[in-house]
Every structure is written in structure tokens, then in C-alpha cells.
Amino acid sequence: IVLFLITPLLNNTAQMSNKYFSRSLNKPGHDNTNGLSIGMNTNGRYAICGDTKDSLTQHWRSYFAQVDQYGNLSSFTDFPDSIYGCVARDLVITEDGIFGAGFADNSEMLTQSYIVRSDTAGSLVSYGIPEVQTFVNSTYTACRTHDGGFLLGGECQPLAVSPPGQTNNTHPYLIRLDSQGNFLWDTIYYQYGNPYAWFMGMTPSPDGDGYLITGSLNNNKASAGDILFLKIDELGSILWDKVLDYNHYCVGNHITPTLDKGYLLTSARRVNYLEINSVLTKLDSNLIEEWHVIDYFGGGVAGRGAVQLNDGNYVLAGTIQTSPSDDLEGVFVKIRGSDGGLLWRHTYDQAGFDDYAYDM
Image (cartoon, rainbow, N blue to C red; front, side, top):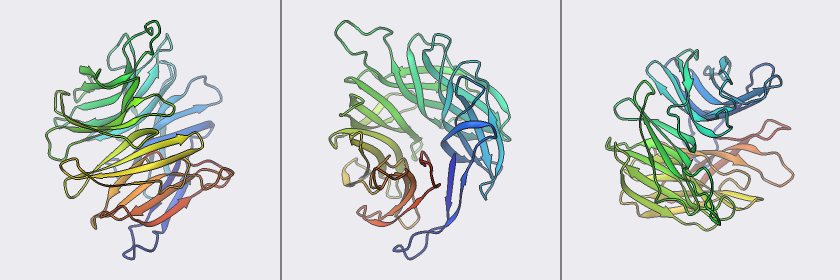
């Protein structure tokens, strides 16, 4: 895990913000640890989830870690690997602990959605598959519902075997759980695919009447794919959708509801395996595009998240590779809310390592 914290932003936007700290965190004895989602716990610490592996186990395991305001590791709990490899891709902070969602392999090595819960201190409460399904499915994003339950969003492959001469398409997949993590219902969005489609980012709508979701459709997982942005109601029915096509392979990663009741979408765009960049799209409340910009990050892996400040500007996090011979570095970018113009960009690098920013 690489953790960066920057100071409140300076009034002079031509200046970049100073860094409080950067930390490289890992459980002693573990070879690799990926931090995939971060949130503020009710105990005042930062909670992080992802996957981890040591040299003695065959499979990756999910974990919850917590750090204090200075980046010091206060707890790191990795969870049993009895359901084979598993990962917590996203976390939700609740009143009594941490809820994580992702995917795991079962005994037939078929991937299925997976949840794990801990108390506020990070001690395991429960984990497992929310509902046994006969098809492959994965969760990439999760959020709290307006009544205290949970939504899991991702991808499913409904057919176990591809039809002769056809691709086994995948479709966006949604699972609804109650406040205890019990399965209520699921939905496969067959209208999106051709050949692959999935949900990647999700957040409750600020107006309280549904949920905003982004991802990709018309995706061949190589050179083509459009950004999918939609809103659903409490039962998973689509209220509206919008497709954004910026050529090449694109995936919507994150949604930021904006102060003017519009939306900022942070997406990844891959021209080829050596040129990956970010697409930032500002939509008004009627889903009309106000502006979009491509590649403030300069290469490498594109932007993964964004927040809007009280002054209307945005700060984004991502990963950059300034030249093919350089390590990947974490990056923060500040842009103008009015037109997406660049205000500053600064990178953070643990020397000798590739640094990926997955969430902020």
C-alpha cells in the first residue's frame, strides 16, 4: 500500500499543495499488498481494503487496514483464504464497522461476488458469498443504500459455455443486500454488452431518489469501449442512461456529483498498451456535456477518483509514467471547475517502485 496525504489547498492556485506525508505500508512477512479503496472510519482513522499475499499461502486474501492521521499503521487484518483467492475491491463505512465487497474463487475456481465485514477496530465479523449463483460474476464497486442496506455492482457472465461461434458476453450486474448483508435480489442488465460491459463506480444520488453508476459497454477488452453512465431507482430499474464515446478503449471509473447539481466523470482511456490516459467529463444536470479534457496525467495509468472543493475546482488522484523508462508514480492534479483547465500537478514517488493510486 502506498498512502499519500496532502495539506488543504493553498489560495494561490498556481502553487501546488504541500505533502503531509507518504507511507509505504505492508503487513510484516507479506510479499505484496494492494490498497484498492480508502474511507474515513468512525474512529477517526483511515480504513483501507484490498488484497494481500505472503510467501506461505497460495492464494491472495482480502484485508482491512487502518492508519492514523499521520499515516502510521494501527491495524492490519487479513481474512481467511478458505474460499480460495479473494479480494475486497471497495469498502463502505457503517455505524458499527467496515463493509467490504469484491470477488472470490470457489472450489471450481469460478469467480463469484464476495463480501466481508469487520467491527470498527477491524476484527472479522463475517465473510462469504452473498448468494450462490450458477454463473461467473464479480463485484467492482459498492455503496450504501438509502435505507441502510448495500448495493454491489460489477460484471457477470450468464452462460457457462459460449454458444458455437459466439463470444460469451458479459453484462453489468447488480446485487442488493439488506443492512445485515443478506441477499435480497439481483439484476443482470442484458441490454448492455456487445461483447462486454460492466459497472465500475457507484454512489447514492444526492437527491435521495436512486443511485448513479458508471462503467463501460461495447467493450472488447482490447481496443474499443464506451463510457456508460446511468441512474437507477431503489429496485434497480434504469431511470436514464448516457453513453460517451471518446474513441479507443474507455471505462468510467468514478462519479463526483457537483455543486451545481451536475456530474464529473473520471474515466480511463487506452489508445494502446503503451498509451493510457485519463478522460474528465463535466455534465450539467440535464446530462449535457459542458467540457471534457484528456490526459492531465501524462501517461501510465489514468485517473481513478476526484473531489470537488468549496471553490468549485477539483482535485484528482491517479498514476503517471512520465517516460517509458521511469517508474510509475502517484499523482495529484488540481483543475478549474469552469473549464477543466490545469492549475497544478504534482507526483509522489517511492523510489525504485511502481506506485499506483486506486482511490482517494
